[in-house]
Image (spheres, rainbow, N blue to C red):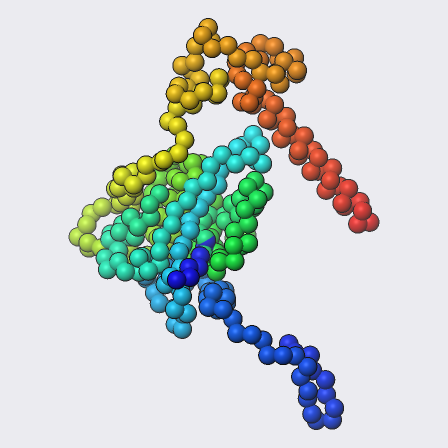
Length: 312
């Protein structure tokens, strides 16, 4: 079965009154392209509502229920935005989500489906990060049929005014739908907050979608979902402790004994930072990385000016 993803002429001449077409009939679209065309004509909020089972889309191609929603976020190093630190991913099947009978108070059962087209917040930034750092173009897969961005949803649902030219920030969006913006700028936490915000925006009267007698607040529901998700979030990669001084796993920098483990940074030695050179190995030299970032930015500005000059 083929899966798609959410990220969510003719030339005529005339002679008298007779028209002759020189073009051949266009070949029929594949089922995937038919779905892409259909979703391209739908508002992001309508597609998101369909994904959650809140509304139907008339005349939707059958392939839509075999679609997988991929929600993701990227985190770049603030000292050098060309270096990616984290990628957070969460996925669900539209068929599984729409099969839920009880959405739960404030959409709690919907939130549980996520185990933390394409879905995200300020999605174009993350698409660019994936392309520029990993050389991965999601559109190059040929299976992306729709992208859904919470910044656009905020306008569609009336959370953020249409007349405001600035897009809503992540922290403000989370606060406006009623839960705390915490432990931010780790990729999986951020995408989890985006998903929960998207669900809360979609449920216009969330208290009617679960136990009407429940006294739970939005924050209490989020806290419960967070605890539940930790049962399924066991990583099979990486290490729990890593030392940025000696570059070895099993401990942190503050536990690294300088008398037992000698280190020297060649970058700091070359730059005349002799004292600092004994505090880390070359691979983890922050000063060198920041300097490289500045040089790349300067070169990028110079290249841009050169391109500008060549135009005139």
